[in-house]
Amino acid sequence: MATRPGKGCALLIVDVQVGFVERAWERDRIVANMALALRRAREAGVPVFWVQHDDADLVRDTPAWQWVPELVPLEGEHRIYKRYNSAFEDTGLLREFERLGVARVVLAGAATNWCIRATAYGALERGFDLTLISDAHTTRDLELAPDRVVQARSAIDDLNAAMRWLEYPGRSNAAEPAEQVSFAQG
Image (tube, rainbow, N blue to C red; front, side):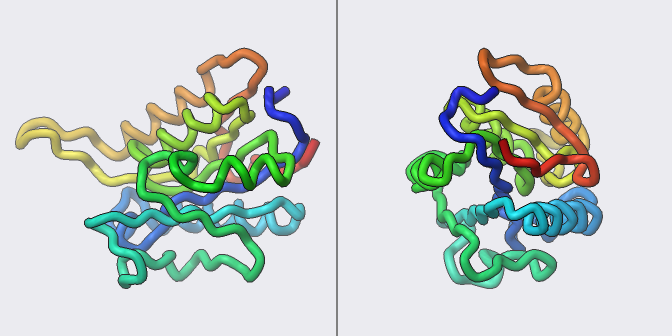
């Protein structure tokens, strides 16, 4: 149904780095769900893409920049390095998806209200079908002012709802738990 050529599926794991998720909402449960999705994608032979952010606050090759110990890329899995919120901006991700015939993206990672949101919309705007793993993305509470806090859970619920109810022409989008996501290709 995607407007992209191809029939392939890819798992995209975004920014599950020590510095991003060490104080994230329900960190252990969410990372365990990411690990479940990763295992299922590998068993299905689906390509896995690891997206890793770096900037002035999260410097490449520092301990905070590293992947959480529960999730480790395997030799041959795709690595994408980014400096902006969307994994598509100023990276080779789109080119790699095109080369592999990816038409459907399954998305997990951090932070929900920044990089996951931007990447989800970026995928849909580029014509990909998208499945957000509803229980495999997280963030932290965001303090806007001393008396105004956007709760992490609210940001997660909001994006899950958006991915269930948005409509794009010629594309499908969904938010499904890790246990239920299909990694079938074509």
